[in-house]
Image 1 (spheres, rainbow, N blue to C red):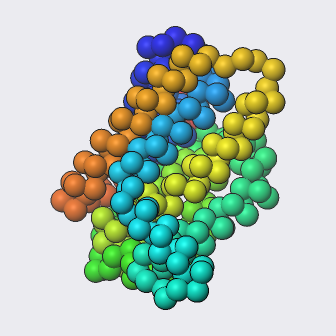
Image 2: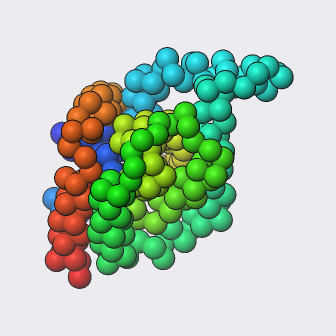
Length: 265
């Protein structure tokens, strides 16, 4: 694999993974538009592990507090805000795990039509903007009820449809439920930890079963670059989200949808 391509694709993954614009769609479409060879499963696993590293590093204090509180609650200790948030992340992951088990093959074949991707990119972009405009934005992630968690978890399962964006649809659901922008983003990022970890493990198993040896240097570069870019993206996205809102991402998604229709329609 060309190492310059590896760097640019890692930057792309790190920048788009936690923004509501579908990182997987960008990893598929950008090489096609630029005429680059497909980067392959191994590289995709590496850059996803990079973004997982970034979110764990950024939220390490919160994750440690949640883990301690969760273990205490399992051992019979009193529930706390951190233990409830940990349970929310766990239960919020269940719908996408079930949907992934049942619909993964369909998502990788029948639902990869460019026009479908254009429709989901545009449609969920508009919904994101409406949620941002209409949402009350007066709650944080610690106020989530179990019904809220179920709704956000079910919405996350929709991310199996290409073009939806896992972060975008979970932020949309959070905003519709009254979370403020930063809280909806933080909970979306916390939900990314088990989802990316599980997906990376499954893809790694597939990779180990493949007959072709991966390009370890490209993978290492991709992982490191995507981790650094993703960390900075999370940091500055959360810092500026309260001021800029979701409209730039909605507009960007509409433009991408138009480009997909123009290129593949």
